[in-house]
Structure formats: structure tokens, C-alpha cells
Image (cartoon, rainbow, N blue to C red; front, side, top):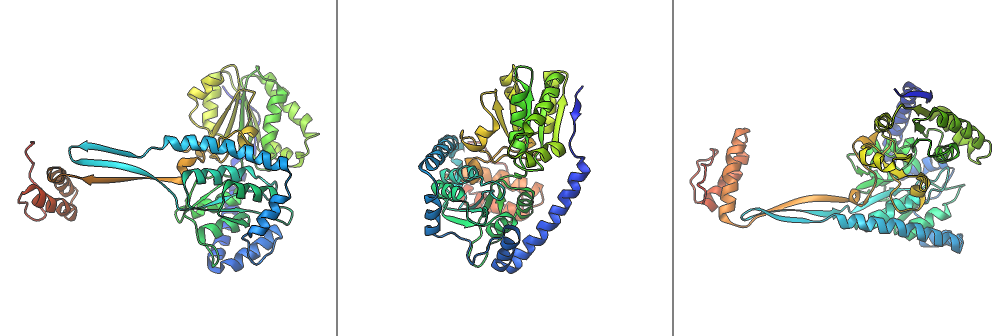
Length: 440
């Protein structure tokens, strides 16, 4: 039976914090909708200490940001974007249009249509997370979206050069130095100077995730990508240093980041907990990682691999790092996760920054019902139909007539009956079921 050597904050505390976030976001979104640019400017000054008349960056400002990077910086961004592009292109190739004749004269199909306008949020208040630009903008471009807005908060009082470079290189059509709820609200609701988008994508903090949740319906969203999560599944084929490093590598994201070790070895569990404390003494981001580990870190010990699998699916983590003697078995049997990182030679940071798979992934147990951001999220699979012969229209119409009246829909039945009369040369009294047609 699984038992915990370390637990996280009680659920009740988390729920109370979420309630406060929900109320704050609701108030701010209403203000943005009512006052538009004026509200956005006030919010940017309040939260980011950043003021300008127009938050859209000019070509000159974008080029200035790019010039601040070294050649190696640019080369590294190009390499990462190439990996994301190559994988997204292969995903796009999996999305095929369909046309099939299901009965003589009846043609059904679907088309994969890119969403017209998307808003890509790139987090950057605490760290300039340029990788999020690759993940959202490039993927939208591969899908064929025609208008791609990207917003990122200023970093240390100015547009973050690396983020702006990545946004431009990825192919954003409009770039804004705007962060937080005000960015999400501006893109979704629109202002006097910013036309609203059809869909919002990208990770962010709890306020950004809540803003997307509240706006869902008015616009589409990719998923509820809140504070990042990591789950390390390990046995004694790996050591404590590796486990602790992978836990803290994600804990440094923010003070509310869950980092969980799941193992069948109490020895490894205790050694990892000790190693976490040792590494926190020298990790430059320890002020954040320590709080995340203390409040949201967990260590769970299981009796068997089967129990580890069951616990992993219960947790349904965003990132799952598997380092065991049966990594492929976990891949074959796990059902709830955002992304898997199999074996000690890879890790979550590879996925976050460069390897090519998308890093915008489901959090807060959303992995039970959705995967992460990919080309398909930027496309609508829309069906179509056409009927090519009189006989086919009359045949389908006779069934439709009777089934419609079975549900009590006379108007629906008449849509079918008028075609049975015209194309089937059959007299059907108004709002009555069409007769069964003889099979030819």
C-alpha cells in the first residue's frame, strides 16, 4: 500500500487561494471589457511597473531587441525552433481531410481548417520564458493560422529581448509587451486598438490560467495550463542526485509548483529528500524552489510497480519523468499524463526548451481528459455532406421523415418530405411520415 514520506499543503488551503484568484480575475476582466485600453494601461503600470501609450511593439523596437542578442543566442533559438517546427510538421501530416461515399450517391467528409486569429501568451515576468514562443507561435504557423498575436510581459521594465526575438523568428504577426490578466483580457475581449482573437493559447501563472478559464466560451482555449507540475517515477536503477535534480529543476518555476517523487524504494526516497536539501544550499533559484518543495513537494513510496502505475494515473501530472528498469512498460500502460520523459538520458527541461515536443501541457489533473498543445489544437475538423442522386436523397429523406416525427419534430420531417416528394416522386401528406421505400 502506498504511503507518504512527505505531503503537500492541504487541499482546503489551495481551494481558498483559488477562490481569491477567481474573484480578482473576474473583477479585472470586467474592468477591461468596460474601459478597454485605459484599464489595460493602469493594470500594466500596477502589476508590471510598465507604461506606454501603445503596447504593440514597432518593427524598430523588435529589431532593437534582436540586435541585443549574440550570434550564439540567435543560433540556439534557431535550433530550438527548428526542432519544434519539424515535429509540428509531422503532426500536421497526420491530420488528413476525408471524403467517402458511405452509400450510393451519399458523400460525407471533413476538412481540417486553421483557426483564423490566435493569441499566444508567453510568460516572462519572473523568467523570460522564450521557449513558450516557439511552442505556440510556430505550431500555429504550421497549422496555417493567418493572424498570430503574441503577448509577453516586460522583463525588468523593458520588453524582454530574447522573448521578442523568439516571437518574431517564430512568425508572430503582432507582438505586444503586455502580461498577465491584462494581456489575456485584451486578446480575448479586444480594445479600440486590438481586434479580439478567436483562441487563446499558452501557459502562465494561476491568474493567467483563471483568466483563460473565465473567458472560455467567448474564445477557445488550448487547455488549462496553470502552474507547472512534475512527477518523477523512479526505482533503484537511478540515484538520488538525478531524482532531486529533476524535482528541483521544475520546482524553480514558482512557489506553487507541485514536485512529486513516486518510488518503490524507501531508501531512494529518503536519499532523494536529503539530496534535495543539499542541492537547495547551492541552487541559485533556491528561494523559489525551496518554497515550492516545502509547500507542494511530495514523496510517495509504493509496494510494487503496479501500485506506482496506479498512483501515477491518479496524480495525472503534467510532466512525468520515468527512470526505472521498465520505462516502456510505463509508457504502454499509463493513461493520465501531459508528457512522458522516458529514461535518465532525457528530462523535462529538454521538453521545456528544445527537443521539439510541445511544453504547453495539461495541469491540475486535466491530463485525465486532454493532451497538450499541438497542431490539431489550432485547427477545426469540420464535416460536410452532399447527395448526388435523386434516389439517394429520397432514401435518406424517408428515414429522416420517420425519425423526425418519432421525436415530435414536424418541421424537420417536412425538410425531408419535400425532397421525398420532389426527388422520389412520392406523395407524402404534410407533416406525416414518409412511406418505407422499396429497395432497388
